[in-house]
Image (tube, rainbow, N blue to C red; front, side):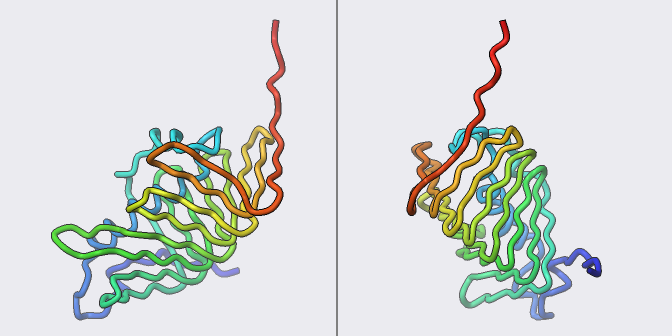
Amino acid sequence: MTPRAKMTFRASLPKSGLLQSRLFRAAIAAPVAGLALFAAGQQLGAQAISGHNSNAPVDFGADRIELQDKQNRVVLTGNVDITQADLRLRGARTVIDFTKGDQTQVQRITASGNVVVTRQDQVATGDTAIYDFNQRIITMVGNASLKRGTGDTLHGGRFVMDLKSGVSSASGGRVKGTFNVPKKTN
């Protein structure tokens, strides 16, 4: 496998100057933090988000990037790899939908194709992950699993995490999991 050079957004834009690097950074920084935090906690819960620095720089790599300016969309394809601080999102394709105005506002991020989200010793995987910024809901569908370094696991067809209420659920067929009980010390 040949190593890929890190791609910069400025280099991949047409010379029309439709979007500046700063705008892309704003468009991608928040969704990366939000989506990646799906795997963040010891529990499958929204309270784990509080420890992440969403202002940290965002690095990304992909085989291709496409700005669909009229559709208010950025599409990263081919070995997408996005990191922010200790969070990492990988997948085959990531679509970022945004609105323009005084400030760019991310509306939704959809990652697909063997999505893997990691933070420290936690790993979440699934076929597709969707973060709806307006509803503040993260959904991971298709062979969803959450694993911790301690050996704890959770598997289901669909995980939904409501960041407003802090309620998370797993569904989609039989939900299975394993958790390890800490050894008691006297």
